[in-house]
Length: 321
Ligand SMILES: [Zn+2]
Image (cartoon, rainbow, N blue to C red; front, side):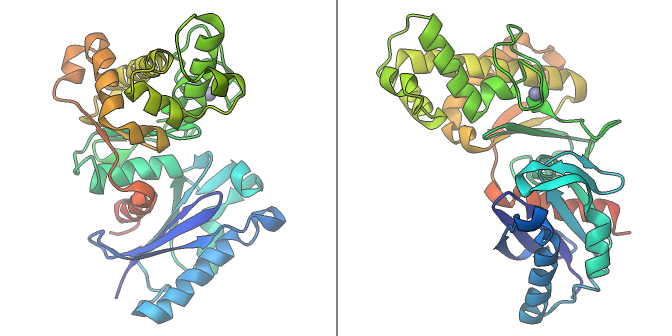
């Protein structure tokens, strides 16, 4: 049986899967990510886990159609090199593709994990195979990926689709992990939503039952979302502001690649329709009408499997003739 190998490397676990050439998931499992010794065992562990599955399931790793790997951090898509993977203790340039090829004897393609989640959702999840889709992963940070005409866009330096770093807070109140200020990530990630709530509590006199948690630094975006759904004034105001920023960012994307589906993933998107309704309210009035017509804002459907699906899709697009 000829299969596609897919791996999505995360800071605590690596999600592994094998797919047939029609992108049907045949088997999935996960291994712990061993970040000891500068993460030098990570790729070997992945390879060994595929080899163990080979015997168990009955396929040949060496004869597989290709391997797709997602990694957290900036990836040079052309040569499969990760440039610094902080979560994995990987320093400097890590040539993931060539290392995995050497271990496995299988052609390997590598991309950023958020890009692969976008490709997975576009092709097999909430994008329903629509050729143009964008995804925002609203988690601890804000990841992004844009699929245009069925293909992920990478850009000149590989930074295309980094939606989390579109500048939306012109007051530039909060610092971003990228070294700049005012990025979408600083106002729409789980941490970003807390940033807004703390700022509002300090500078605006809005009633809230969450004052203690905000003052003690124990407030979470989940608590804020739930309080907003229950009508807490400060929480509602916070979610509205975050939604406004998300709307501005996706309005800009709409004018650039005009995605038909805008897919929201990550922990913050668990708020579902409550969040989408708010984003819609700000998005429609500010977006170039032909770029927003028929556009659907939806929540992701594949959960933690999205990156694996994207990795398999990438193999199909680039490595299978
Ligand atoms: Zn940034």
